[in-house]
Length: 180
Length: 131
Image 1 (cartoon, rainbow over the protein chains, first blue to last red):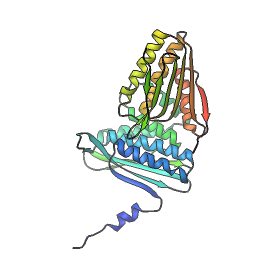
Image 2: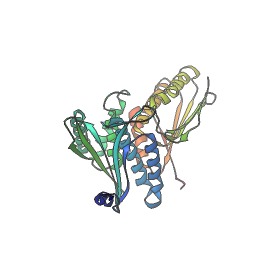
Image 3: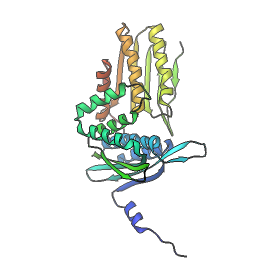
Image 4: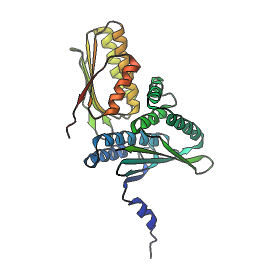
């Protein structure tokens, strides 16, 4: 019996600049092990950009675990958000892309928020973060502080892409560049 | 008043080390903070500070040596600092020392943001990272 292999898939995954890719449930175990892996990359990049990468990876991945529209039920009954991430390394930067399905009702608010974040200069963005942080815990909009932190840490615009999946959900992806 | 001593760990979650001493007023948080339930973890620390500043009323040296904390932790840190600010406004003696990696420009900016946010003086103490 012959097995049809999708060679395009493996070729893409093993492009030289792809340092890491993952698709699946994102819980604390995945976060801490991939986070630890990122930290070991200090050997081939400067410590400051790896620190930034670690911080951005944590914020974006925690957003997936909380907000992904697709959940996986684990044997301890917890439901963990599914998502994917790709980390690429170039001579002058890292590029981290995360993606997950999101309920359509959340798409417009996230797009508006991201556009607003991208329009602000650094000082206004810091002010915005302080204002958001002062709001009581648990209030809606907590995810936005994560996005503000990501924008401040990377010092580059958030690159958002939305592709419709069906009537209820769309695939939301965010790419963030971290200069070396 | 009881002291709070928590031994930090770096496993699936990152639990910071905590040492709040009611006898000498030295309160230290160090390590990394990424927790299963951030509010639940920091609530007793905030309550401890409220009790100390309300009843013991001695000077406090608050020392932060966190190398990483996530966004939800950053809110809890603000809550802790706000208790210290209230204490200072009511005549309490507060010194805050925040140690951070000298290469971590984002952390330096974070600390400045806390100063702007709370109106507290925070001593920035850079250290060089051993690798």
